Length: 149
Image (cartoon, rainbow, N blue to C red):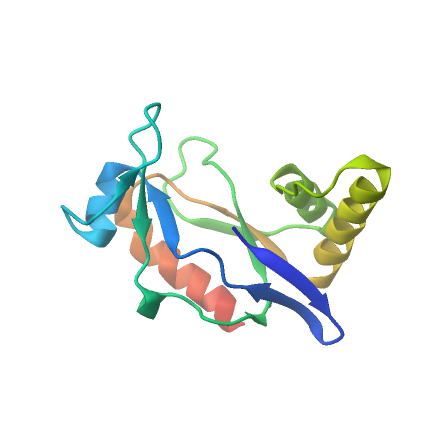
């Protein structure tokens, strides 16, 4: 969950909820076997895990870039990070955005205008990687370099 806000100085991102939804293997890897977790529902093995407060951002921060996760296209052996055009970023935002308040023509118009302003105002990158824990160090390093500018 990412809550964004447009300010006179640019876009900011507000902290999300202090939880993650992970499959058991990833939960064990990142939080340790036996870490407290709550099952999401009976239809999935995913569980909800609490993120320690020391690992959470506590206040809004400037939004320097956004990364859109993209499933691997098959056969990928490495982390791929590529810039998106504002048009493709807009499509990604409006496809992957939940906004329960965007009802009726005014709400939908506001939602589409938000997506257009955000896509034009913040660099957006597409991230794809093989679903293999061995690529995590490269994945973290690439995203950290992107965040550093």
